[in-house]
Image 1: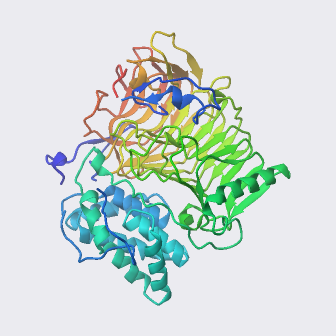
Image 2: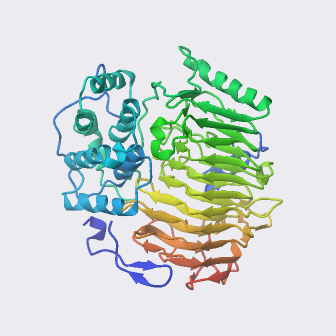
Image 3: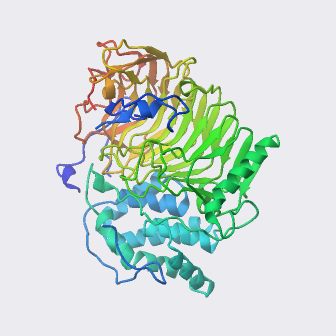
Length: 583
């Protein structure tokens, strides 16, 4: 057992009132400062995040032929520690999905039984994933397999020499299993072991982020846009011209070839009436076959904009963050400009350098938004950080008043996984349903929540309409060494009330959410403060209270009823307490 559980596992309670045994193992809600106010089109965040600005040596070697340096397997760094982010990356990079809970629980338990985190056990886990029946069933080409293996094992993009070497070796008959073994028993992987097996609980060291090797061009497959041969720097302008011409012709679909890589040095815009997709429509499980849009330079603006009625489907949008310090809030991966009928679905969205991975604009930003769909996306934010100032990022932030946010898988965002903001002239009535959220190596301030926002201290508070806003049927859990400060925040006085004037929302419902068969480490499980006339019932959430940060109460369910900042239908009965500024 880990030291923090030396006296035995903590008590776990479920929010429906029953008890359970212990389970082993801004766009921001936190303190902010207002720097400036910008119009929706100014800067790159549509106004909100520029108003809500944040407050508060990798292995070096020459890779000539192989791209991976080999040495005998090391057994150092053994500890009774389950490398949760490593396990998550084997799922996302090999299998293109969030871990299923039985598989996750089995992997966490296996490391404990097998002697903890060391090079040998890590290699066993990685080799098992990349030679599994599920991986083989993806039907990947050698190029896609090698790309995924680099990302899952040595935690970076392939370099050109190494990629070419492994392509040649596979073509010459070297077995895939042997290639996988060489990666996981090589010297470059060995240098990661101490980071992966850090033993850090509730700190930056629980994440080993992602490498900084730039993405390279890959062999493409199938028809579609492949870029400009011999002139990769011209690929963005050529793709933008194709998108614009399609819009001018009345709309239609622009198709990327599989594994096409387009490097972006400014915002790429998908116009109204145009769909950008990948040939064959690979889903996130086949992310390594997707056409990819990659941030190539640190320009302070959005990476991809999808205008009203446009669609982004089956494309990999890669912020290429690399490390937490490579950030600016404006460098958002994907922003939608209102609706109706705007769609972001079945994409891989990874490592935004900005405050959000996906941001849905609405009337707050100057765009009407009767409907926008964000569905079935795999969103990973391994390169962000919860503890270093100004490095947080959301999974999905919603300013659209009529969004449908369903079936998304979000891993290691460090601010909030999914947040519904108040809107202005229309009630915020978006639906957030059947999404999965995992804090594996990065802790989060909140899991999924409703945010009425705030205004400058001394100003009178406002009340905003959340009638119809629905958070329902979502699954969220954490690893053994990370946490949500608040699992489900319903209102955000815990973030803002002691520094700013915190606004209030009215209406909304939080029902039927679950931690599945697992649990979430939290300070407070569900916190209602800054929402009145709301419904919070029928949730089956198991929380572990062994996190020590801030002053929020270590309870499953709290609401500021006597203070007048929470009312509605609650089950079970919450602890009635003041939550102002407790984060």
